[in-house]
Length: 181
Image (cartoon, rainbow, N blue to C red; front, side, top):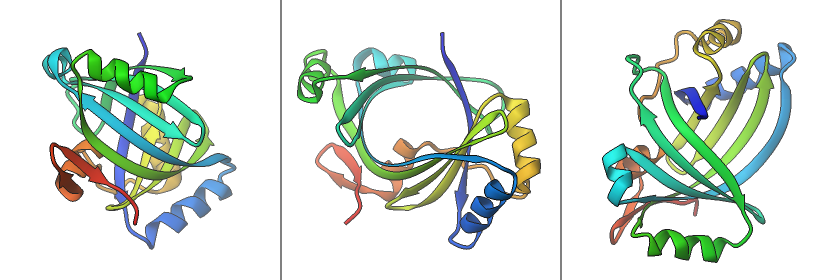
């Protein structure tokens, strides 16, 4: 079983470039920059398990992900069971999800920069409602990265992008959306 552990932070326009400069100074490796469209589905068994199905489109690539939240006793760190696979036919995948009884619930777009730093992955996300950073890795490694990046003063953001989209995005029918203009 794959377990994802991450910590998320909301950033302002002044802090983000400082953190990127610190990443470079510390020798972090810039891996890529992507534009993503994320389509999250809920319903049936997913509701019972506090889980989602996400179809993420990045250019010509599409990735289907199952995520189920785990309780870990520390609200600063989010831990989830996560399974991902690339899918060849997006339309067929969407039809399968719908036929299984899951409904589209949230759509959000994101620009993401990905960095490899020490034992963690650091991502800088630009969403229509704000700037965020996530650090993914083991809890001890995330804490060490915070120290090295000098961001221990940043408040963790406990809400995931789906919840933030529901709060800060626009509702269209039964779907919450956050898209760039």
